[in-house]
Image 1 (cartoon, rainbow, N blue to C red):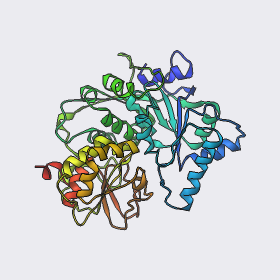
Image 2 (image 1 turned 90 degrees about the vertical axis):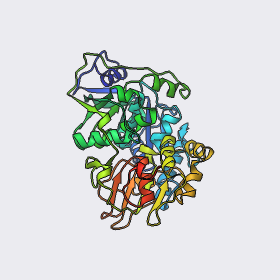
Image 3 (image 1 turned 90 degrees about the horizontal axis):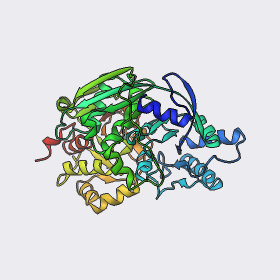
Image 4 (image 1 turned 180 degrees about the vertical axis):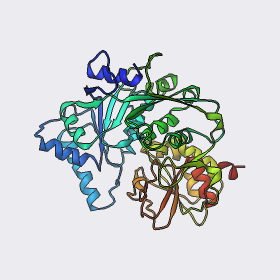
Length: 419
């Protein structure tokens, strides 16, 4: 069996499972945010459920429109708070404690190798970087799982991606996943488990692995997953508050498709409007002027991402025709970035720094685009109207490319800016 099949079999109480099989499986963690949790709460109450299956296994994180941007957002967030207090949920993260959900939960040691995690948010697939099976589900599935501790699944086929070769300078996890999506398309892994492996993956730090698994959904994937190893162990050891299990794919496991990539040939990649699969080398796009840069989100708002952006922009100024918005993904990241002087680097460059929020990624707040405006963002989606006006444009890139673009006022390569 593949790692995905082993994980699902273990949680379904079965010796083995096969692709296409329908199973009921116990979940280790359920999460929802201020957009999706209110629907789940209403459904939970509609089915007459009196109590949650485990108040320590449900995480409610107001991050999309929080800090509350208007009355409607405030009402949504209040629903989460009231339900959490009523059911004594230990994993309710109020503003001041919260962060962007998919950065916060691994940081807090709440998702671990071998877990089965469901979330009412499509980027729940992020946690596959830790060797967990994690996938986005609908709010009604979350409602029933909150009551029963179980969810149904169709076992996905697995697709293997083998990466080899040494990465060039300024090329990282964001470039690898954008290149992959550009290769297979936005439905190239539809309802499949995307298993990332090979020497290049084994050499990747955890933040880059999280970025790759985060965007499995942008290829239509049911999940993204990386076999846990020493990098995983080092990351979770200091954080874990309960036991965890390392699963590995069998050598003779079957895959519906296998693809290989020579990473030594991959350069900084940019996804052009209006699909994450519409990729080109950044060097081909240097004539495109921009109005905004966003560095943050569950894809690239981690401390290492801020370090990368700061290394490019240190001692320089944001182009006078551009606004640059930096959003640390959690309170801890914000605090650490302050200690390391990264926030000062951004402020000296005349960027603005926001409290943790999903904000502009989904066109929520803190950086909405006007008609005709263009942004370079480290976020995960660039659909029509995703960050504001339907006639605005979003280009997806790494923190290094985004920071260089902020300096030059156009899509740029880091080496154009860094001496």
